[in-house]
Each structure stands twice: as C-alpha cells, then as structure tokens.
Image (tube, rainbow, N blue to C red; front, top):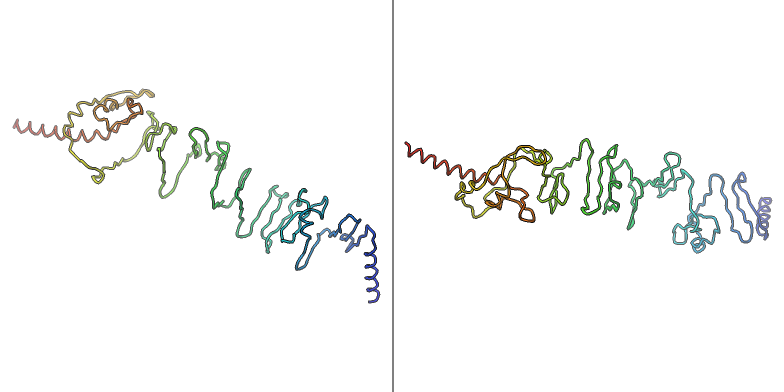
Length: 337
C-alpha cells in the first residue's frame, strides 16, 4: 500500500513539472495522454478500437468549440453548452470512413452510412417509423429509385420540362410523363408503343374548358371531343349506340314540324369523294344545309366556312315528311276505291 501511494505521489510530481512532450501510455501503449508544448492542447488518444467518454454528463467549453479555438487544423464534433452538435473547425471538411454507420436514436436503428463495399450509395436509413425530410425546399438531383411506395404528403413540383426530363416507366422506360413547354404548355402522358396507355377507375372524369382532342393539336379542338378530319378510322367513332339528351324535361315551346317536306325539298343529298382518300361517300353539303337549317350547322369564326353539321337532326324532318306523305297516299287510295 505504501508503494502504491508513493507511486501516485511520484506521478503527481512528474505531471506537475513544467516540461513538454510528456506522454502517459495505457494498455499496449496504443492509448495515451500527451501534452506536447505550451501552445498545444491536451491530446487524449484511444486505441485502435476507439475512445469511450462515459459519464452522466460530458461538458465542453461552448465558446471554444463553436469558434474552433480548440483545434487549429483538425476537425471534430462536440456538444456545446446548449447540447448542440458543433464542429470544432467549421472551415474544415468532416469525414467518416467508408462503410461506417453514424447511428441515431436510443436503439441505434436509424443511421447514415456511405456504403462503399456494395454499391457506392450514401444510405440514410430511418427507424421502423420511416424518415421525414423537412424544409422549405428539398431538391433531388439524379435518379430516384426504390422498391417501396414513395409517399408525399405535400405539394410536389417539377421545374424541368421536355421529354428528356420525363418520368419514365417500364423495363425499357418507353412510357413517359412530362411537361411539354412552349405555346401549348401540355402535360404529356405517353404509353408504350406496343400497348398504349390505359386509364383505370370506377369512373374517369376529365375536367376541361376547351375539350378533348384525339389526334389533333390544342388549337384544333372545337368541341368536347374533336377527332381529325380524316377518311379513315382515326377520324371515326365506333359504338353500339349514341344517346342524345331528348327528355321533355329539358325542352320548351315544343311544336310539330309544320311543313317538313318543303324543308327537305330545299336540301340536296349528294354523292362525293373525299379529297384525302378519293373514296366515294354520300351526305350533304353543310354550307347548303346551313342556308335552310342554320342551327344544325357549326361554323368557323369567319361564319362562311362550315365545320360540320348534325346529321341526326334531319331525321325529325324525314319522319314528319313521311307521315304527311303517307296521309296523302291513304287519301288517294280512298278516292280510287
């Protein structure tokens, strides 16, 4: 016991002597405490396994740590008096070795790691509850990949435009979603070349002030659904039936057509050939029909050239003309009998 006390006294005297380059080694001389000169700091060096500072509280000089006065060239993390994590030298880079995890939380289940061994990815792994990225602006420069659903609670904005900045889908990335900047400013949803695009749902509602164009540009849309003026299936609609709003609930001033035959006599049914295909067809000339029934013809802005006409409206004249003609036939039959 006396020998141990004498050793402690000798150690105390040794440390109190104002000399430099004093070093006390621990273990296999891999850990040490050293003071080199009067302008240097006290160096506490751990072994190859690191250095463990334990205790209920660990205090740092907040002013020295925040200003970087503790370290002249080295860089390390420390807690200041407000329990904020600060860098001893703000101008220096802070680095962690490859594949080292920086853990967070009491259970160490959240971490940040540069995964050099597997794929050169920086991994930010949250706890079982996930990760929250918070800020007035979060920018992602590069490719966003993931096997799990990506859920976004707030507004999502994409400032880049053009096909080269599109969201791409499928193994060949041929299906795209992008904003086409320019005069039309169109959001483009482009499906695959082999199978196109499919919209699914109990109901698909399209809210538009101009209409839907199929195979036409924005400037050519004139109705709720506009197809191109082509003499082929791309300019046609195929269906089992077409329903028109025709209930008396929607109508007023209902009158039977007075002289339908006179109206029909002013309209010529014609044969013609389409200019783009030279195919023979039958119908009416909308401009001529517009002189007799202008309200069933749709006109261009110049009010001279017709866009088209509603053929179905002619049926009511045909029905009433046929009925009137049949009455005259029946009357003639009675006279002959």
